[in-house]
Image (cartoon, rainbow, N blue to C red; front, side, top):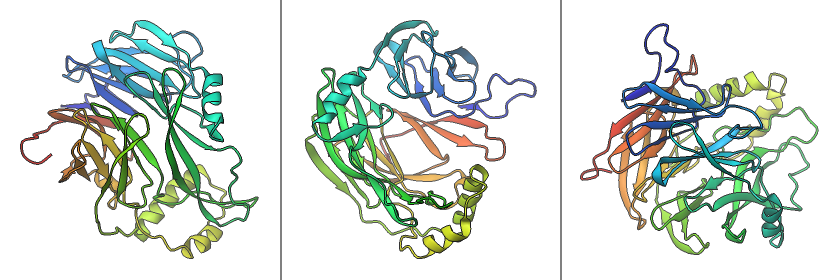
Length: 357
């Protein structure tokens, strides 16, 4: 099954852009979240027909500022979490607004204040029980003042429960950046290492990695370390072609940057390899799927390593698409992007857990 793509000439109802999440309903329909442009929640039939489209940008009931997370909860209730700790809206699959929830930002600030933290801009990861993860930084932290320094901002992950109690998951190294000072120097780093976190499973676990090493820490919901997942892997070098492609994309958004200085600074830095882990997700069975970048993304293929709920490495599996949206008991929802048009395709593939993962 494939949703999106070019489809029939003259029919634009199936076209999708900027999809950040796709989650199945119990009857096989697929719910998608598109936060940019014509901000919508889309519901597609298994046949590929668009059956529902609801939500829009605005400040009224059921309207979004910039939705960032989509959940399908028990009874096919669709929860949409907005940016900047905005409202959480709950819909039925037809788009009827069932209820809304407001995040108590004052209570959130108070919960993190004792640890010297300042919460980020948004809920980082919502959990089925209504609790959520936030990322935070030390209140007194500042980036390096001298231009040309490679740094990683300290990042603390914290779970906020229904009583607004904070459960710390420790300190981690944020996204690699280049300090710019007052100079016209690009701050971006190609294929940066960065801390990441996801949650899932039954009972739920929270997984955190720094990304630079093949190492994932698995925590309980209260922040107790359960185990550390490790693998020994070969480093994958970043090629010159990959750097040039990355620069071309960055340049389109930042045309006036000083690339000559950037190249001198980056040329003196030691890391010329892809991060050991560039992404991960937890499937419906509590298995962890980790990803490494491997060369040209335009090829549209990737490889995942799979760990079971007890942390055992089961092996690697090649996938015929770039991104994973959802992994269930017997199928995967993956995504492709047409780099020339920006159009996306969400594809469903059968998953046989009796053999390879």
